[in-house]
Amino acid sequence: MMEKPYKIVNNQRVFNFKKTLRYIQFLGKSKYGEEFKIHRSDVVTLHRLIIYMIHEDRQCKKYNIDLNKGILLIGPIGSGKTSIMNLLRVFLFKEQLYNIKSSRDIALEYQREGVEIINRYGKKHTPLFIDDLGVESNSKFYGNECNTIGEILLQRYDLLRNYQIVTHATTNLNADELEELYGKRVRSRLREMFNLISFPAETVDKRK
Image (cartoon, rainbow, N blue to C red; front, side, top):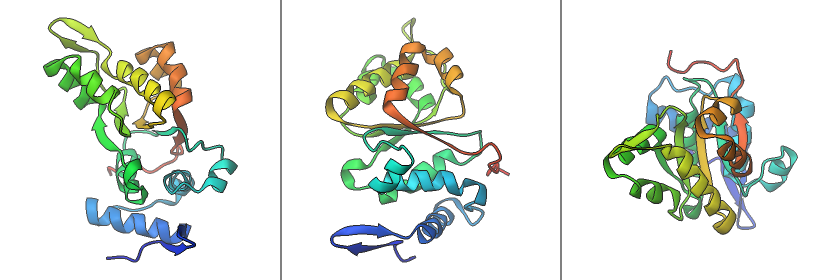
């Protein structure tokens, strides 16, 4: 097992960024196979994500990252969004740990179980990571059509406002495409719910 990328100083974790990148790569190879690699083009994106996950307050302020909001990680298909968000959970404390659920799976659950699914994911007082916003289609339950993810996002917004419970998500869509799917109201809420962090356009397709 690789050494942790931080030291405890005055009861606080002090991270070394280069060691943290190597540690993430080690975890990635262990979980996803030897082909997993941290690419140079992604280092800036990873830096933003890491300082958020470890709550490096000074650095977050420098880069306008609000620790009271969640992360919306944007990038093309194959950029490794889901894998990175999965691996970075290792740096979170117990109360910050998020469950991972794909938007497609949530939409399929709605088709089977109905409105209870919206309550299950929209009102539960724990952090949630919704993977791949926008790949789902509107769901039907006994003929009633519902924009399931849009409704859940609105409820998660209320959780943030009232209880400071964050939501995280990934998407390969831009803001206009998200508005077309979920409407202006949800788009407005997304700005208040998330720090937008993007992979660069030149990021490597990790599927190849």
